[in-house]
Image 1 (cartoon, one colour):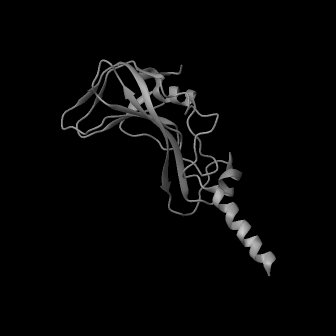
Image 2 (cartoon, one colour):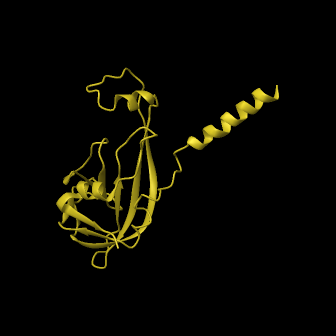
Image 3 (tube, rainbow, N blue to C red):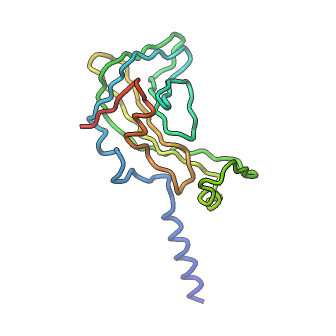
Length: 182
């Protein structure tokens, strides 16, 4: 009688270790290198009225992004009825937070277009997708605008989710911006 109870207790305790919600960036992440680093915006960016952010993916600015690839967003503090300009220049990265973005996909039949990576996808029956993102506050000596730079990886199944690398961040920003670590 005690053996089945102990087995159940051990199983339950080990399953709680699988939670991703509060997973901190690991040693291989940029989390500890980003505070005090510099973000250089090479071109002035205009945010159209009624918008709060400009997204960058594969070096292209847009008002949205594909959730399957890494991206970066320049985010303003308030929405305006007038166009808002983010001036080109150097911004010091202040505080950095690692955040988990979550989306639940509806369960349905899976259609596979190619066999690449099928084993990993079929092994994870979860309908929950996660994205890890760095939320960086930007400070400028020449501009009073409070900006935030959010760089996230791709949405993925819980087992495969990770923070974006420096190379992925640079690829997202393209010629529009550069992230310089100390």
